Amino acid sequence: MFYKKIVEIIDKDRVLKDEEMSKHTSFKVGGKADFFIIVETTKELIDVLKLTKECNIKTFIIGNGTNLIVKDDGFRGAVIKLNFKKLDIENNQIIAGAGIPLSLLSHFACINSVKNYEFLSGIPGTVGGAVKMNAGAYGGEIKDILISTTYLDKNYNLVEIDNKEHEFDYRQSIFSKKDWIIIESKFKIEHGETKEIEEKINEFNKSRREKQPLDKPNAGSIFKRGEDFITAKLIDEVGLKGYKIGGAMVSTKHAGFIVNEDNATAKDILDLIEYIKQKVKKEKDKDLKLEVLVLGE
Image 1 (tube, rainbow, N blue to C red):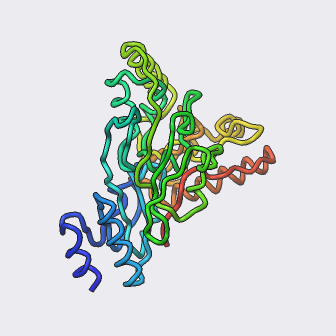
Image 2 (cartoon, rainbow, N blue to C red):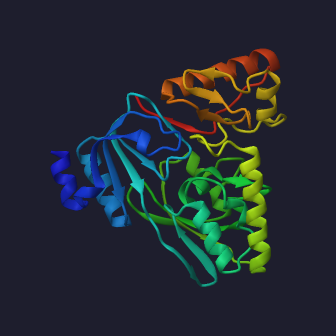
């Protein structure tokens, strides 16, 4: 019944049944979602949300699946991928849809001689996830360049909030606590020299390649930074670099990363996460908090 109704409002090739979530996460793990729906407009999103509510189907919103572990049994419901791709300059602001990859936003800023977006160039993920998590690297954070965000509230109203109303903190914002769906964001424009911007991007990307395991499936930093400690340093100090459970391994290049070394399952990764947390608690008396999201049964 749901499928018959959903393909009346969304193109059939953007409605996938029993879709393997391993195809849609950077970790390359995860069982099947009952439905995987790609939406390209706000109207489509609202129509899908209304139908899932009417049919009592659970929903989960994703961007590029770069900060996500989907469990092996998958998700009983509909995963909705936001494919909002607007990227433009209007009224001396950059406007970027929630589905725009951060690398593309950084490149767009560069070719338009706009500086302060260089730190985004190597962060996997999309604008929506970055705003929600206040993504950052190399001394820059989303909050430094953001002007406002338009989101969809629970009553299907479009609301715009300014920077302050985001309640930005370390790797979180008001969107971390609310059931609101980010549609697009507006960003500041500060002009610079294109050559200098390119050099900075290249420098950051070179540093990432040297320090991070970009050659293996991963979800970036698994744990948040502690208030009084560097998480990767603690994991290294308790001797867990290279430690494996099944096909999941603590990266030998950067202890803050877990990599899918050899056809890992989500269970391998989650078991390794739990082992790391317990060992760091036992030996360092520090509590590690997840930076990634976990979805599934």
